[in-house]
Image (cartoon, rainbow, N blue to C red; front, side, top):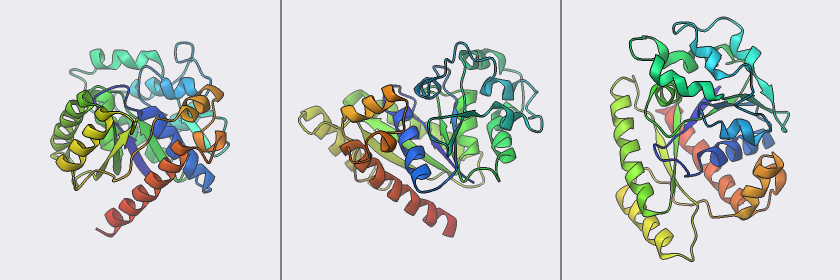
Length: 262
């Protein structure tokens, strides 16, 4: 299994759409994918028709055992989605209470890594949708992952959020045996606006080594796919947004090969 995290400390940058779009394209290629919703808002869970406020069991259950994960529990929590090759580890609003509970509790930072270890033979990929907050849930996402995707909306304030995210990653890397490779992904790009054009130039100038040279455009078909509860490539495989995500996936798979060789 390969584990990718999708994270940014700013909300509204396209993390959930990116997670589901990549999962859908991997599934289209025949891969078995588990998507992990670690955001207490539960956008990914809601995307597939589940109510994070009403679910009796969720990822929250994984954190209730003092840092250990009972055998079989991650598999019991999996929910089906509209794609037979994609399974969901759902979120619930109870995850929001973890930040209050975690001080003084050791071992909570590796819960997701331990949980995915139990699913290692069942899936080819895991994609983790991280909350826009530096805390125990984001630490879990980064600790479990082998590759990080950082979506960044092409507008000025998002650049500040990216600076915080890169700073966080530098801090996390000090405790990892290997630095976590990452790709910055410009999202919600609108070539008609100076804000998008200017921000894209700033990003490319500031992060020439780590930015993906493409971008994800504003595309109403991505929103329509969300309303239908389908991965974007299932809903409209030829839309501008899906074509961009196909190019992004190709980039990430190439980066993955480089990391494996290294």
